[in-house]
Image (cartoon, rainbow, N blue to C red; front, side, top):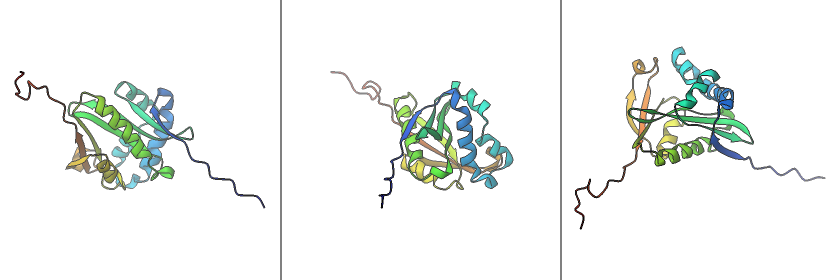
Length: 179
């Protein structure tokens, strides 16, 4: 009788994406958001599942990360700069690997970028029907800002969340006198 083969640990890595990853990123977004397709309006679903050609245009707008599990892209998140702060968009993990911490690792990469940026606010929009999303963001320090109306976002209501970093002030800005 032979021993069963030992289970091998999966290797997860987070890295900055490149244009060659656009098709895989589009596939991840489609797979993840399809779980809740019925809750999105057709217009909103098109926005949350951009095709590879649109993803390619986003590389000039800000960083995009991918999560690879044994060399296969299974998750993604991207940032862009808006007047209100850094904006997280297109956060997704393939359904078959959700729940094992990939989303948290992607948010760790975002948090690291945010902490090194000159921005004091990072924000996102999500929905109440995406199971666990709000709770995951709260674990990373995001707070509810407001509910968003269906009229604001292609007929799909949701919520805005944000996180702020207090930027250090110089002693002069605090009104302290130098000795």
